Image (cartoon, rainbow, N blue to C red; front, side, top):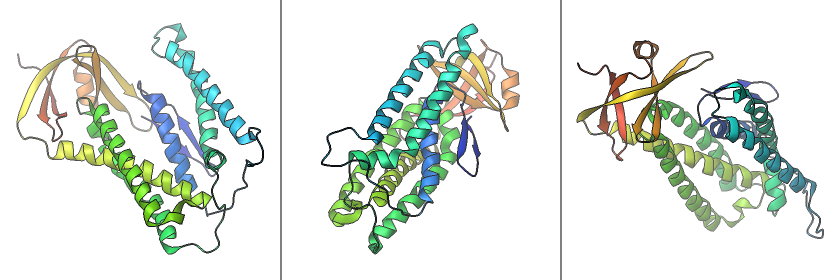
Length: 301
């Protein structure tokens, strides 16, 4: 699990357990920064580039430098991330330093966007009502979508190939967000002219649609699943826990040849099974074809 400590000045992120930890931390950092960003008032930003100058701006240099550092930090994580011996701690400092660079990059993201794509205006005194509505709607939509996804996280964990279902739903949302931004541009051509509003609307719509469609896809898949239940036996390849304020318990099963799936289980079930033991999974066929696990049982003798 990922544990987040909010402070008055920002946030601290602890790396989560699991093989998708780095990716998850990156996404959560973006979400946390946007939470902080959306509550800031609209303000003027100084342009960091000049059309008359051919020199690379300081903002771009900083952007390229941090990207290279993050790429360099990923290399030892890929090389030693799966090591269970004495080298298993080698990726930790690279992970922490890479996450620091990522957080700094996210904090600079509005200025980076303005540097690569200069806005027509950096500040507006008289704001169109529709533009103001969309500015606040994007922020609210993002918050709602994040809350919806939080309620569906456990269901993705107990869905066969749940990660693929999550990305399928999320990428569909990106397509919807692209369509919405084009429609907004056609309906109200000046909506993206101002720097802060452009960044907030794009971020809110793209992240919001990504999270919302992922959550809705997962909900429809398990809530409207077929009622017919079927069961299969699998071998528990490994067990794991995540520590913190609350402990999560996981089984790793090879559901297909060469592919392991992680399942979230309770503490009693975790203690009643050992690695290498068989476990019976009773499932139903989801609305979109992804199997949803309903029960974990001891195999019948």
